[in-house]
Image (tube, rainbow, N blue to C red; front, side, top):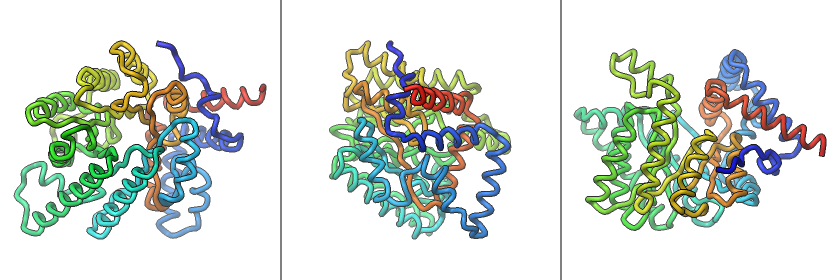
Length: 389
């Protein structure tokens, strides 16, 4: 397999020298773990007491990792990336809400992004988080089969109705819909709900996609069981395959509650699990569709190799590679340059509301071995190339 991810000229073609310098500075800061902790605490405090820091956040970390404060704001970024063949997934990244009016607002925004996707070739997917449409505690109770009160039953019916409205609109408008995975203790209820949506809307092809977090050791078995159901009941499976984003929280809760952690025992075990899911889906690609969400070069090469071995065209509509905006441009843009389908998650929302997302990105880059150093290495290489050009 030809190695293509070292070409920084292709990776950073859209970045000006100023943007390149800003990215280098940001990843330098993120590489310092104590600095990330202090910066997070100071930023949260400043926003809580309404200090005028939003402009500073907007001009630095926000603009690097987010498309804008609203969907219209994102369009210039969407169009710019698409000139290089990289598509966008507009992701309304407002988290941790608990009120019905906030769930209704997320519903409206998701429907709006489906309309955007329908109108623009550059936006092939829409996306939402289950907890954007309902309380995490309610998902947990439903998943644990705990008896709901009358008001909770009515509340859950509203969650189901929101899911169904979004999925039916995606189906009518022929827009693929990614549904993110979250914490394991709420995921059973979300999985059951998404599977019902697949039964309803994935009869001809995958419109509705669930997400498998492969740092969970049980996810491959879940995929295989779902596949058996899909074969019996006649529906297609859409899956976004990722490693996962809540590892520390998962391990802490398992230790606190005294149950076996759902997380694989090692990074190596997670990598093996991830590649096994990709292999299983490629082997059944006639009835499945994959959104391979990864910043891991080896896993990306592995899927590319599988496609080559099985004679699957690089632009096959059932296989898309995905990365987050502001990260792994060496993977995204080099894939697109070589004809593969690739999309960047493009988060947006008010600066204050998107802070939990931005903090997670900073913490992820700090904790994932090699992620920040790889970004810095690539940025340094491109700065040097331009200086010598």
